[in-house]
Image (cartoon, rainbow, N blue to C red; front, side):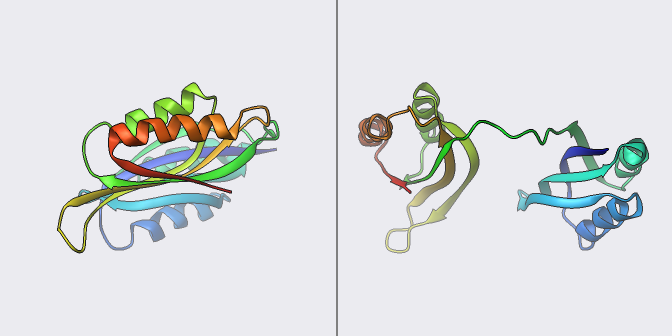
Length: 169
């Protein structure tokens, strides 16, 4: 039976790091399935889902931890099918300042909304040079959660945070 591993990696960014990681996984019969990786503050960081035969899991874990200058954390994953959830997207844009992520996602958590994916960035506004905060999220909630209640809650805090918030199907 295959095991599912969730890897969190971090290392000084260098050429060949992904290839080296992929080579170790392949050498141990692992299958690279899903990942998100990025260059952040001079480091290469990522999340990776790997499946591997149960009898090869321990050897793969040992080999992953021996990759030079790469910090690897490993957790066991689960492929059971979650309950059916309604999914939608969220976009947030506004002048960057502390607290935007905290306040937006507190409102979502209070409404029973789960974050499936999240990416954020700051960019310089083309006309003024002011730093803008941008977030894109894939959200999920049970069918009984009112989409209008979510929208109302987000619109109420958007004014306080001075950001534009859009819910998309």
